Image 1 (tube, helix red, strand yellow):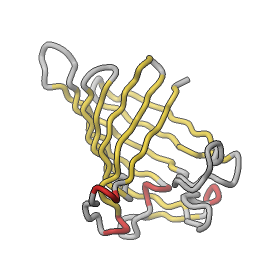
Image 2 (cartoon, one colour; image 1 turned 120 degrees about the vertical axis):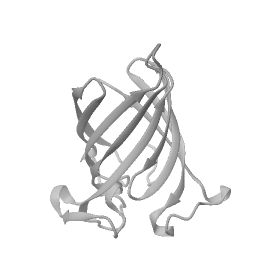
Image 3 (tube, rainbow, N blue to C red; image 1 turned 90 degrees about the vertical axis):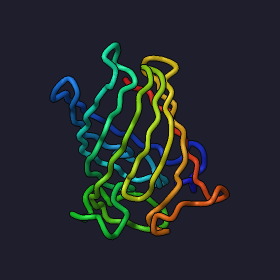
Length: 175
């Protein structure tokens, strides 16, 4: 969202992963699921995903190409043309501190290329925008993600000019 000060908008989420086969799996989780204050403006993103990976090398497992598709809420379901199953469940979507949004579901997908245990890139459609980015893991349970949003639904997915690109970053620790 960008409208909260540093330290505001504190929240907690969860994720459960299950392997279906050596190259397939699914995940169920939520980002910003529990809000510790009323300043969270980045969505209450509950999701269910399916992922399939494929390597094209016979010698090792990198690079690994991964397709992920699923349904989710919050920012994953803001576009009017594709959202469904809207409700007031859990107090709404919490995607804006000044405007109420119902908690709706919508489709999303991503195409990722994993180059090593430490570095990957991705192209993502999250029902609200198209993003491109990279993730770097300097340590086993820590990840830094950075990228840019280059098209958004409110602008009919027109490619943004350089001055209007929206940059993002994320720091994650796995417990």
